[in-house]
Length: 308
Image (cartoon, rainbow, N blue to C red; front, side, top):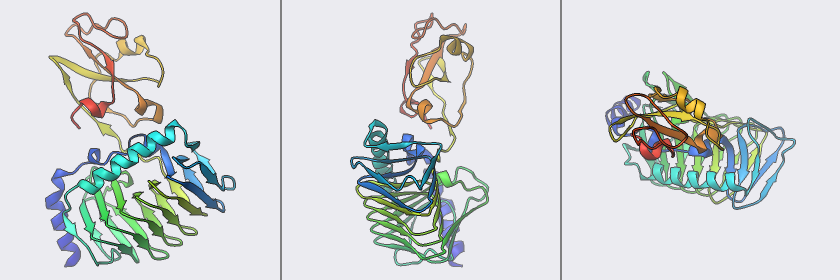
């Protein structure tokens, strides 16, 4: 009955939360991001970049390997990603909780989408099941006042359409994930993250002020949920055109004049610069900046101007 109560409560309260409220932005291109240092032992693998800022120490790559990403030591990308992590951390911490789980072990629970809070530490022993109830936009946010600790061989399982890109663990201190644990979701820790030997992650590891320590882990980062957006600019219909991070392509603009609707999953470069444009009723676009009715095409982040 306890699990059923959680499912009912979270289903009733979920209507006010969506994945746009906890936005990792360009940080989603990072599998691992630390504030002071990233230290690896053994043959860890990451899908996504590994970075540190403001610290400058990354060790253990190799033997660790990075796929679909690069190493970023206190460079512009790492600092920008940390800014997004700080914003995502604050957004997650600021959501009104649906259910207080303080003092309870997450092991053995089945939870629907919602915001779950712990006044101090959180513990996972055994398996936690996250049930999406057939809704791929279901979001889970765990607000943890101090530490997050999992036992060895613990697991987080997603069922019925839930997506790992919509699971967030906001940790007020440090996180320690036990050996051979299969973990799901992005960990946003104020201090450090310790991934014990053999643990695996379907989500990114983001330590704002401390270190991330790896030991023969698999970190499947780079999780950015597909995003949809629509908007109106004065009386004109707005569309979108994804362009490279540098320069505009007028031919692409013209060809895309009638496109509106879903924005496909974005690469890192595309996320840095999404070109929105407007077209008049005759669908004319002149140059890279203006259309003949005086409708201005300008570059800006889609989530700055469009309702999500």
